[in-house]
Length: 86
Image (cartoon, rainbow, N blue to C red; front, side, top):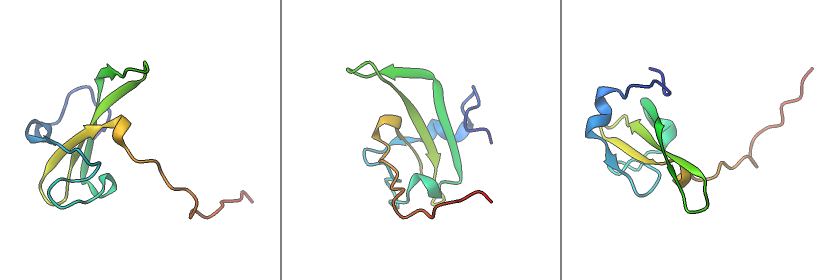
């Protein structure tokens, strides 16, 4: 499955809008989804002239959901190990 495929997968047809950036059925994060598709063909411009896209997730619980890319929470990198090249 190509997350950036130009044609949406069939499962996106039943997706519901999640107002929190998680599955509205089981509250799983986007990282727990079994399939992902980004609607990069139809960006929306925000009031501050930035683009946002619909991100679609097919959750392991069977719920398909989508949210705006601009609603994605920031990634906390503070607990990541430093990777030092050898």
